[in-house]
Amino acid sequence: MSLYTSFPYNEYHLVKGDIERAIQKVLKSGVYVLGETVGQFEAEFANYIGVNHCIGVANGTDALFLALKALNIGVGDEVITTPFTAAFTALAIAATGAKPVFVDIEPDTFTINPLLIEKAITKRTKAIMPVHLFGKPANIPAIMKLAKQHKLKVIEDACQAHGAELNGKRVGTFGDVACYSFYPTKNLGGIGDGGAIVTNNKALAEKIRLLRLGGQTKKYYHTILGYNSRLDEIQAAILRVKLQHLDEFISMRQEIARQYDTTLADTNLVLPVHPDNERHVFHLYVVRTNKRDQLQTSLAKHDVITQVHYPWPLHKLPAFNYLPKKSLPVSERAAKTALSLPIYPGLKKIEVQKIVDLIQKSTNS
Ligand SMILES: *Cc1c(COP(=O)(O)O)cnc(C)c1O
Image (cartoon, rainbow, N blue to C red; front, side, top):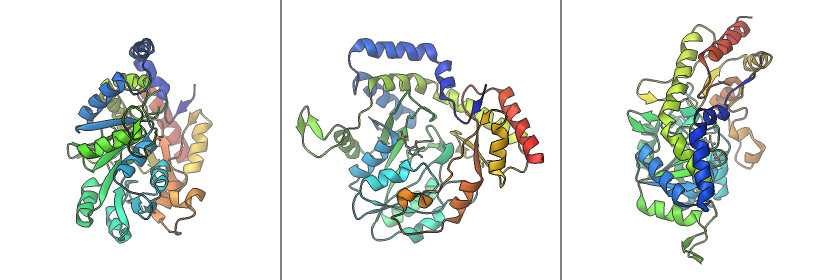
């Protein structure tokens, strides 16, 4: 059987009975969108992250978009973000009419380099959107300091970092607002699309609640031009089950990461950094090598189907052609050398060992 970088079926299998009972309960309730279950999940997720408010929405991209809209960011504004992320981060910025401004990543971590942010700030800059990529916290203390100095908003893209921590504090609690995706492969994933926004700002939370529901303050009474971005009951029911197991699933990912760390230490791969003051939740385990394509091909020959996150930094994508041309060498290099090894709850020790053996054979030849 093939091994993949991500394999959400395994997670479903680990809590199958509970998920199937939760779905049955929704089916019998007769309420399928934004009902009681969504409310319960929102309260539980807010509690897990350690914030006052959580608003469930249709997906992670909408979460980012609605957070920006609620902060009145749009045409004429600039938002600083990383070019080394899922394109959806910057698509959400562009959808508001604001301009994404890409700032290169740190050489050793894959996350935005705070030392380069200040130079990118103009009088049109309204916000910074750091991404806690692959489950590793970005350098958010340095980003918050800059944001305070320049009076900028911070929207954390935590779509890959449910439960990650820095200095004992959860990501998602540092900025003005944080956004999550519950796409099936994410560390907390549904069986379909879903997303959420968290914040401690009550007024902002109320605005986002209004925006996700077409701008209605009561049924059929629309006071502002809103959007339609609702979370459905089946996804919320599944997410409630999986949230109870999230810490256990994170531990399983960390266990696999430790096994890779020790067994790959003497290869020529560059391994991911994760200092002791961080809780890296290993959404992905991304190594670097100059012979990336060769390694990926040789693993594929033995049914280990890996992925590249990400083959193009965003400034090199046709969709972002309209932005000023830029050279962002650290991201460009990362796109050529990064490879995401299999990591997911349920991946067995013996399977990790098989992958490691294949890597050792490939990198020694
Ligand atoms: C998955 C992801 C998104 C988008 O989330 P969707 O639920 O797929 O819309 C945004 N940013 C990052 C970093 C992601 O990993």
